[in-house]
Image 1 (cartoon, one colour):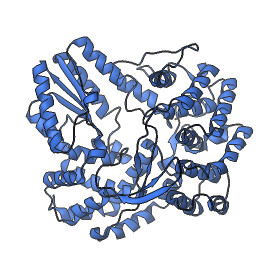
Image 2 (tube, rainbow, N blue to C red; image 1 turned 90 degrees about the horizontal axis):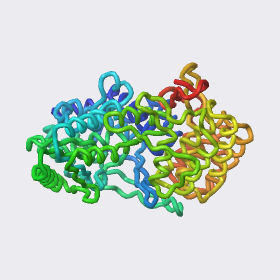
Image 3 (cartoon, one colour; image 1 turned 180 degrees about the vertical axis):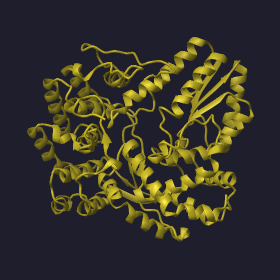
Image 4 (tube, rainbow, N blue to C red; image 1 turned 60 degrees about the vertical axis):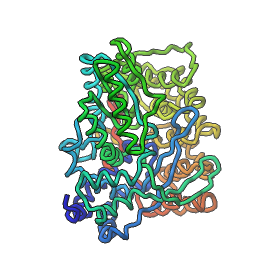
Amino acid sequence: MDHTRALNRIRNVDVLRVALKYAIYDRTHGDSFYDPFEIRDAVTNGETLIGELVEELRSPGQFQPRAAFAYFPPKNDLCDRRLIYIPIKDLTVRYAIAIVFSEQIETEIHPQCFANRRASESEASTRFTEDFSTGGWARFCQWQKERCGDKSVLIKTDISSFYDSISHEYLIDSVVRHLSLPRESELVLLLRRILQIPVIYYSPRTGSIEGPTTIHQGLPIGDGVEGYLANLYLKDVDDAMVQADAPYGRYVDDIRLFADSRQDVIRYLSILQEQLLRKGLNLNTFKTEIAEDPGSRQDMLSRLYQGGSYESEEDEDAGSVIQAKVDSPLAEFSRTFAEADKFERSSDAKDFCKFLGSHDTSGVPKVPLAQRDIWHVRRLVEVISRWRGPTKHAAWLLTQTAIYTDVPESVKVFAGEALIKLLEDKAISPYSRYRIIHHLVKERTAGSSGSSFRFIDRLSVTHKNRIVALAPSYLVEPAFELNLIALYLLKVTGSPASELRNMAAKRRPGCEPLRNALDLAAKVNIGGMGAADSATEPDATPEITS
């Protein structure tokens, strides 16, 4: 790769426009959290943002990444996951680099690497990597199904703490070798700078602020560009497994090995582990299993993928339909629930959410909206109150039940009241409350008319006013995601920027995301946000369609 030409491509206005589009898409369609003020500014003032980046990138050695911040959504019922939120400008630079790298190396990434592959020409107008359900994940599922037909032994495994364990130096080494770049080139220097992110930590318990601290290891989780860099990191591993003639497939860090005998599959596993150790990685021994007969192989795959490990259940209501497509090569989710059934463990709560939102393989809802019942609402409240793992899915299903016109009116009213009680209860996870308000204030598009709306405007006046009245109390909570979404709630319901600033002035003076949001609240108009960051609603209800 000509590093000078590549660098010029990265700072090219047209490439940066595409990169910004990808950054906005991934942030609004995939992230567990995003700053709506930042997205609105990026949509409205994108050309200004790109012009500023062109200037910053004229001297790559002087480029300074902006401070990112860490947030902590639930990973399961006991533990949180640390995610890093990169400012949209820096995320755009990362996408520009990935675009240019992919032009050189995409065809050299082995087909057995199924995840985070470049989007097809038709998809590439909106997203960097292909849709997982119709692209890589579907191929991964089909490949496994075929291998189960001609191989007698299966090992499933994954990489322990994969993204957090990625060494920046090893990643740069891989990029330098595979793209034939001079190690001391300005392009490699720019890559090093965008990897070493200064991160500010905000305690979700106390609100205390630490940092910024520059990270020297790991990639953020959640968007296509990091997944693509991870593919480059593991390219040597993929190549080695292919050279060993191993029936090997990988989706991110989720790995499958097939063979005709136990001896052969363990030999492949040994090769895999050796290659990973060279990268500073290791297998997760607790998630490594072997299946040696047809029944156990099918059971393992069904158990792993039924309902999906990579759910996208909320916002556009796409997850359930996607899941039907994803599961069809393996096994359809079939568990059902009755009112008298009890939740004994977190998996019951998770399965209930799948049950309530699932579709069959033809896309027909298993529990139509018209059949939503008050007991469904009570169980969703139980999930959000008691089980942290599936709270994201449950928050969407409850919000949906309170809004969609096909839901019986009595159930809608009951769900609306349940939403408010959860929002009023400070014992409820801040992230759960954030997700509910996020769904209520996110701008959406009614597909048949193209008009924009927000769910909060479809609640009763009484319910809407009670939710808006909660916003000032959210500004004093330690969790900054609640601070930000409260500001946005006030903004979209008519509060002027000056009033927002006065309300927040004495509450979180050192919180940079909050400070940035206040600046943007005065700068941007929160009226119609446009197609770039609005969600299109599903064919679930005659009034909200796509």
